[in-house]
Image (cartoon, rainbow, N blue to C red; front, side):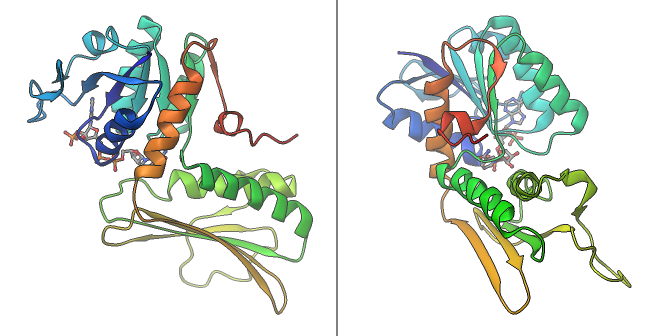
Length: 262
Ligand code: NAP
């Protein structure tokens, strides 16, 4: 059975990933990694497995890694995974363009899936949004609202940006030319093709995304609400199973879930 390294094993997502691995029939926990100095380092986490702070040693026990941490931590461990030939499932969000480019370079050496959202239903939402934007055509303004817990560090969420990309793709446009992240003061008339994202942060909300297509006298709303993190974890474990043993490359999450279109 392929063995999985959980990177950020004591984090909110890391904990749910460990549970999802324990329920998966075709994978097992191989090692668990935390940041150097974390109080759990050296403590037992499963039979014969202690929390490590040594990426190289932890990777040597595993065929695939699942990582939900921070961009800096992810890149540090992913570089070591490329040296060790370990496949990589990356759920961390908030990367800069340069950091995303480095992930692309590392994918020349190992198989990688990097997705802002590992929920199957969110990826189906993305597919629906692309189709809705394509079929509605002009005359419908697109706006997104995302809400997450108050500890979330990056804004807007990686998922919101991914869904905004789906609107732009459905319209045959480049998101960067139409994205609006801030509105304050005298903002003038809304540009026709704008794709706006509003970010809310509050309490313990696991994640909520709504896309609105607003026409004259009608509006279409597509919403996903997460009440736990387990579906992200299960999707990441399913992806790890799919990715193990594949050739190097950066695989889209849509391929894992059978959602690729043209
Ligand atoms: P979290 O609770 O802060 O967990 C992150 C964990 O990573 C912490 O335990 C942290 O340790 C640890 N860490 C930091 N540096 C490390 C290093 N160098 N090596 C190993 N572990 C390290 O955060 P979270 O809520 O789980 O979210 C993590 C990321 O996943 C965020 O980017 C979030 O947006 C993303 N996310 C993605 C999805 C998806 O489906 N793709 C779903 C949910 C969340 P310390 O506490 O010591 O810093």
